[in-house]
Length: 149
Image 1 (spheres, rainbow, N blue to C red):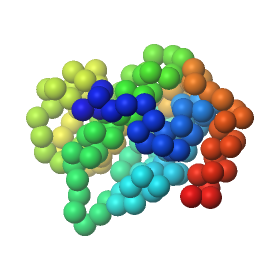
Image 2: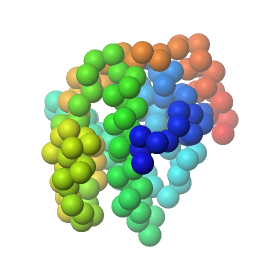
Image 3: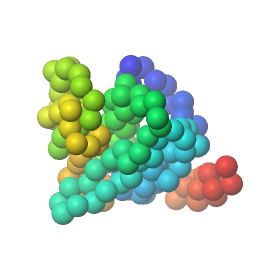
Image 4: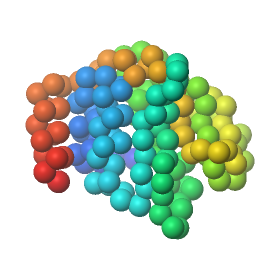
């Protein structure tokens, strides 16, 4: 499903992330403005040692595990497409239960279900990866517009 979503489907948040100078900057913007797309979940970019994780920190009373799977798949797909260095997840963890085989093939990384956290984990060094779509002028314009929203 993540592969069939057309570019631009997530509006200003997606374009702001694409215009960011680095993958880390893009992820920080995505975390900051995610509530413009979905106010039922909170996500953080957590840096610990030599890893970084996009981690679900809280969600609504009616969790939607499929939404987390789709979100991480889209994040992975976009990061792979716009990073100037090869993007690869270290692992993907989901707190809910499911079968991991198809997910491990898609992410090309270990996928764990019934994990303590729901998170996509990468090497911290990937945060410094430049983006092919970086546009400093557009980034500034979109950041101001997102702040207004």
